[in-house]
Image 1: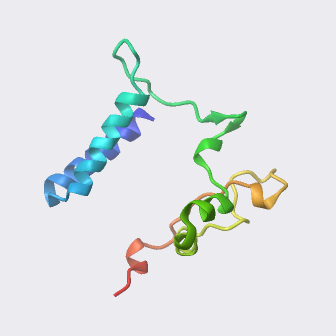
Image 2: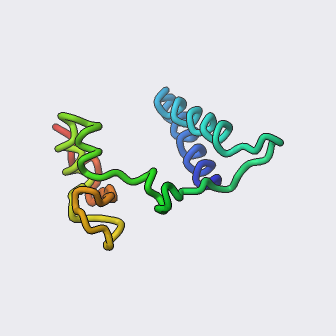
Image 3: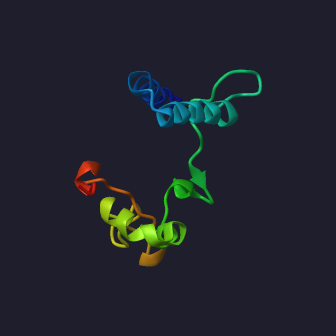
Length: 118
């Protein structure tokens, strides 16, 4: 949604202004590049949202199975799956019949600071 992009970009911009951390600046710039590339009409207006329907399934492009996460992250997958409570049983679609193919939500149940090595 366009307003989501605007709000998160403002947050990163303000974080950069306060901290001067280049990661925040880079993220804000990348959000704006995305909006210009993907959410701008050729005549100059902005689209309010993107269609999340892929292959007849709402949100399919944005959801991953645990197997896809493991494949993409390799050795880091176990830690990320623990942090974000990713499993084969927590799914978006209760009508999916093959557990390994069900997409899953990433749920952060505890602050990321709980996972820092001290």
